[in-house]
Image (tube, rainbow, N blue to C red; front, top):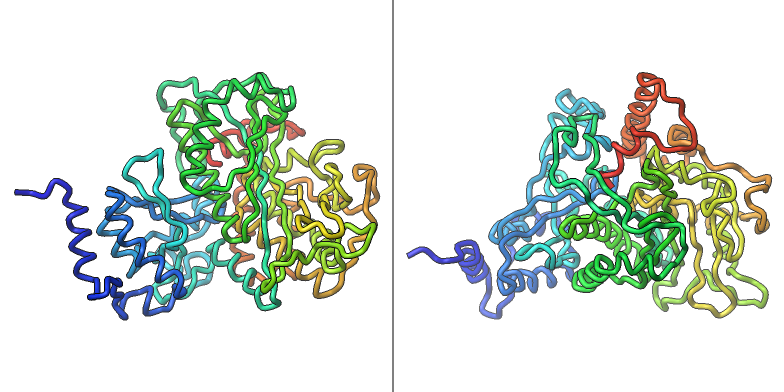
Length: 521
């Protein structure tokens, strides 16, 4: 007679066959993770707990997820026995998602020697091994019987994958750790909630590599342009309540959901967490919100400015503080009266201001994101700072003795890759500390100030990044050349569309942008 739940039965047999008399899970020394020393002792202990938990949870599938270069979540769903195996040997994925731009246009010649990158290990679109991080495991309440875990990518040799944004952020965090510091990050992300008004997908919704199909038809969830209007917010309350309930279950530290300016525009804020955890939360938040909303007839988009009538641009404000690793003391906190930042905080701020143009490509990596940068808006248009001022690039919040002292960088768009956005702050800020950069005086009239302007489009931002040796030195030639080519391919397709259609680019978003980003982010 067959077991009614074959996968669970096999998983139990797997656990029994790999447990010692004391109940600990034996990991083969020859297995990929152990052989290459890819987990800390804490991760190994967490994996032991996880192997028992997934059996008790009676899961059918576990999604092995990873962040692609755009900051979108990719995943494979595996059965329970396969997941338990992945906790020892990792799991194979194709490197292909790394070679595609935002519309899945192949950007690199994968089937030539060097994979179009001059890297022997990238020849032929090879497999990578993804390794689950046990601390990121969740059970998804909206997908019964399904677990979710975030993974890190490695070459078969055990070498970290060059283009993994999570690996790159971890490397910069190690630089901070070597100086006895850590980074605390708070997320404040705006996005749009819309109602789905199309019953099923049609041929127009189907695209092909390099050209996305038309997005699904939607309608506003509320009238908009009545800031913090309670009755308008109440129109969305059933969705907001569902989101809050699911976020709580999966451990996202939601603080608030606010009704913003545009029709259905929302802002979610999250409690501050260590930088890597915060980046993981941003990735999970975006993919979870999209999945949950679609299941109940709504649509979530993190595209900066949809090409819909009267839709206002959305931003991502990144709050950050440096902490002393041993004591947890806020190193940005001022010690003297009438000051808002410590000397170290001012130098970090100086680095952010000095490298603002070069870091913009990481904070605003889409063609559409530059629709935000306009005078007298709630977004910056030049490298400025001031105390508690929403028109500047860096809003300083703090006072002597205030442990919540922080810098709020308002340059980001909600579609930014969270790992690259955050690491850009570390690279620029540490350079400011190491060289004692002065941020200059605060600016309370930022849109009229004689200050360096931010790039006004994606190609200009990429040029600024390429010309700044700091990021090439810290991130390496291999990654920087790769990133520039990937994003220039995206910008080039937009330029080609403008040429072919004769559309004149203005401040308004185009149909190309709407197709490209509305249902991708």
